[in-house]
Image 1 (cartoon, rainbow, N blue to C red):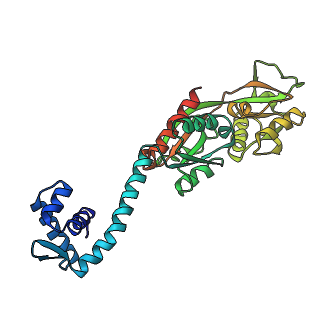
Image 2: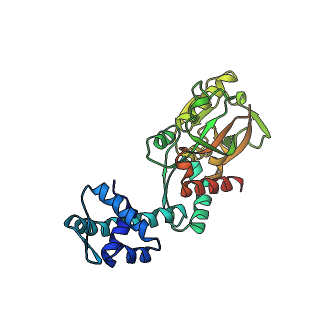
Length: 304
């Protein structure tokens, strides 16, 4: 195998015409130059230099190798500089996927901080709810996923949930509590706390599939099956439907924070249910400087 260091020596010998002059140019000894040239000729399987008096001249094979060496060494130098830029956060990219309420609350603060600190790092954002966002991470379609799951104490945590992220780096960000939403004129508007069972006869507006499953299982735990009149992944639509008096809902606090809650009253619900909001990445990606820096900024955003 031809090594880059041997190519550099060959170019120095070709340019100076002798081992001693090449050694002075490279800052090494003449025997070192001689040894490296012998190693290169062994790798090439043919002589590359011939002695003509006091000078060394290239053979046809040596001439061909020097011609290619210029491009090879230039490409290697460019690659080294690019890798150094990425490692030093002067370049690089991070592909981020997030669920909508995370996109409108945690992500903007984190990305603004990344742009200010590392303007050479490019970050793209697409939206997807878990488990699709986690699938995208495992399939190589993103580098970092903002996701959530309901705690193992919650009835919505299925038997497979406990180990669903075992192969990933999990960075906990915050605990997001669910709150109830009722129309402003509702009989329970303004209450300090509302038991889920008190909403048993209400029409419901449900959210994303995972949240919908969670809603049904929590309600069944307290003795009723909710009558879901509307279901939408769009949190502003949920708030709008509740505000129009078409039903009640439970949403994570992050979701309520991300929309203008017009015409609704937020109330604490019992039993208290929380979801864990996390940032996920693959173990190898966690060592990439740009990904690690983005994870750190997401953590800071979650504490603000």
